[in-house]
Image (cartoon, rainbow, N blue to C red; front, top):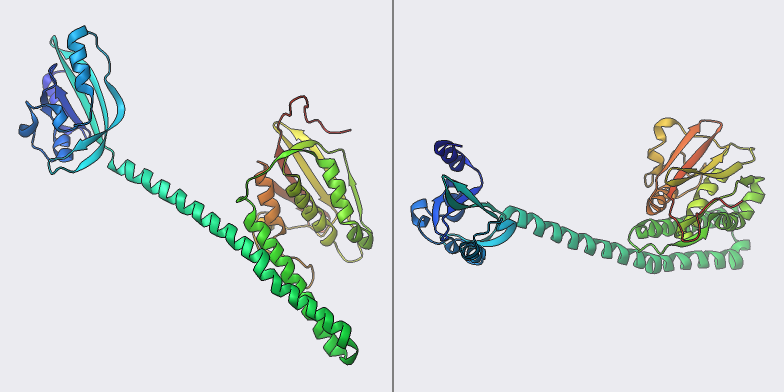
Length: 368
């Protein structure tokens, strides 16, 4: 490169460029450096570079180079402290290397003001701190909701029970209906509060995972839903399910929500048929819960996993509107995803994946 071209590159560069001789004296100070440090080139050329970066140690290398004659890159993208003419200090990304032209050795320093990067880093750390604090506040709210808000509901339910027992015979039919509605509303509020607390807690608590047999967890779920299964005349069948790693309590809640929906969303007079299965696909297990329910229109596939998105009136199909949103959060905690395919009037298949993890001495195969 000719000297004129080199000069043009140096003059127009957006990064600061400094040339130094073997004695560490500045021989070139480009316009970007002038803007960065506030000095004119004439104030710096001929002086020592430590005036600009008092904490940098590259001058030690210059002495070593003169003593040993060996070359090397002095700095690569190291952050040092720069000092402006007005005394203000600021972070500088510095790279220094040795070069040679026309048989003369010199050193090139490339500098970039790192103030914006540092501010961005500080803002990111502040954001993380605020997000952590926000999560702690949400966790605290969950605690308050689970304790302080539930107690009044218990009182309402308890006194409604006492009112029904001690004064029920004195009430007329309309009075007993009103009382029944009050009890029902309290129970619905309790269910909603439970789901809100559970939904808010998911993703905040540390996942305590362990190996468990999903087949055994499913047996527990079916036992818990025994009355609903019996009353609806449902048939719940399953294939062999795998041993997986994760939070078994959350998996229990996931399966209970999905099977519960299969029991609930059926046409009048239809006995629910629910089948559960799991197949291995690449690095995950794909679980499926198939039912013969009322089905879902395709344009609702994504919507149903959002909080409080209901497709039917509560009077027809009771629910808090959080069940599938909770399912999605649980599945994401297992490192998977959840989706649905459906034929309106014929049924739905809810599928979700769980990442396969290898247990020492156990390939986590499906139990026969």
